[in-house]
Amino acid sequence: MISASNVTLRIGKKALFEEVNIKFTEGNCYGLIGANGAGKSTFLKILSGQIEPTNGDIIITDGQRLSFLQQDHFKYDQCLVLDTVIMGNARLYEIMKEKDALYAKEDFTEEDGIRASELEGEFANMDGWNAESDAAMLLNGLGIETELHYKQMSELRGGEKVKVLLAQALFGNPDILLLDEPTNHLDLDAIAWLEEFLINFENTVIVVSHDRYFLNKVCTHTADIDYGKIQLYAGNYDFWYESSQLLVKQMKEANKKKEEKIKELQDFIQRFSANASKSKQATSRKRALEKIELDEIKPSSRKYPYIDFRPNREIGNEVLTVEGISKTIEGVKVLDNVSFIVNRDDKIAFVGANEIAKTTLFKILAGEMEPDEGTYKWGVTTTTGYFPKDNTKDFDCNDTIVDWLTQFSEIKDATYVRGFLGRMLFAGDDGVKKVKVLSGGEKVRVMLSKMMITGANVLILDEPTNHLDMESITALNNGLIKFSGVALFASHDHQFIETTANRIMEIVNGQLIDKVTTYDEYLASDEMARKRQKAADIEPEDESGE
Image (spheres, helix red, strand yellow):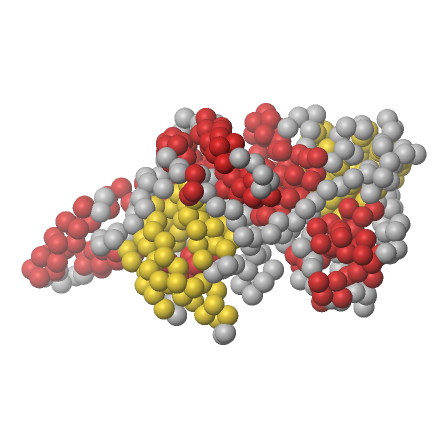
């Protein structure tokens, strides 16, 4: 068990945390969530002892070992891969090195023999004889082949190093495991292996992740950082989000009888409990949900964006025809004779690791780039809205947010325009901020305001979830599900793709793979497809804001 007692952390005059009291118990996996800048990564560092709190204490049960995911990918460059994993249990590694040094001595004394005997006893008690095989199993599970185990870390690629450091954190069955964005840079097979590992892990896990799909799979509890406090809830991210939204709705419906509210909440809890799978983790979650007292559920005080794409005109039967499009970028043919037809009910996710190919195709379809060969034709009823991956040139001006957005509105009225900004949580004086000084997250929210105000019936979205917190991603996800038009989008967010897309396209070596299916079905049907996918790479959290 690990707990925080009256923990306060001040950065300058600002209190990131104020008198936080929370207890994390064994057998549970806690998803630590919060808005951008709330301090999720910082709190993990406080728990691990990397940062000292201004006040308060971190208490760990006597004799328990804490392990955390290292973020410095170059720290172990001079070490062997297998040794790096075993270093996850520092004491065990010390014993191994001391033993090796003793047995290598030419003048082995009686004293040395006594010390070696003591070390051997401690080594056996720590299951040291299985250390190398256990480390190898972790590496193999994460996709690090055996021939790499005795190489130096400096010889590995970046993604391979990430997997080794993750294996290091998991090694030796730690009593407390802290994981900060563990799915970054992992292929989907490695993520699936990690999910299964954590589901069956019987000790304490605390994880920070922007991957809602991952959090929903592994977490029994949710710890929400909200205005400097941390509130603990039973259930995974979806349960926390939907229960919070339900309570907000009930609070607005002031006339609803108390009995009706209670019944609605009970039905909600039962629905989530019934959805649990047969895994240990899900069973534990089911029991926790069934024990919830209604007053334990509290609405979050955070505000949520409201994203609603409403087309100004209904789309016709002819949407888009692409014929034989090819394009070479810096000597590489990223699109090679790509052809497809888009139907009026399509929501197409472009997936896979080839980022340049996806972005190039979107730029061509948006009219920002010419193909080398081939043609495309939009239907006469279509109007397109384009969300670029790189919006730098869009905001390279001195306009205020309101002025910038007004140019895309048919109604040139500041109050009307501010309504769309309000949906995206720009309030009051925010409207007079210059667009060029906005943060990455703010620019994305302004671009989404633009997508709403233009009323397009076809949306082209290139990585729209980048720079957004989970609440904004969820709002965008829900908005796109409800959207009555056509969507062509790229994203690394598994849940976003699975819940939105009815058709999957992947560009491999310039060639198009096109399947009418869900994302999960696409991955299940093709092992190589799983290996080509990669989780979202989230930039480090800025504790001062977005």
